[in-house]
Amino acid sequence: MLKTLKLLAILEGISYLLLIGICMPLKYWFNTPEPTHPIGLAHGVLFVLYCVFVVLVGSKYKWSMWKTFLALIASLLPFGTFVADKKLFNNPAEAK
Image 1 (cartoon, rainbow, N blue to C red):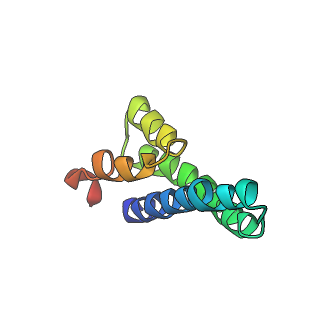
Image 2: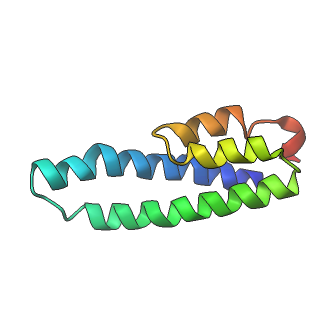
């Protein structure tokens, strides 16, 4: 379950960066909205899955409310899920 969360964190982070770094400038600066829909849809699905898995993994491994809160907040910040993957999800005791 933790491996799935780690994968979701990376994929959600990539989708977020694609959305805000490529799709939104294309939409608003170059009047090309076409890439926004599929990337936005993928990001939305990954965002929800990431949040659900944070709660499930946090419950399974008995994370503190603070750690769970930080993992959830990470999904709202650019590069946040990458940081969460490195700082919050790499406890060897929890990888079992």
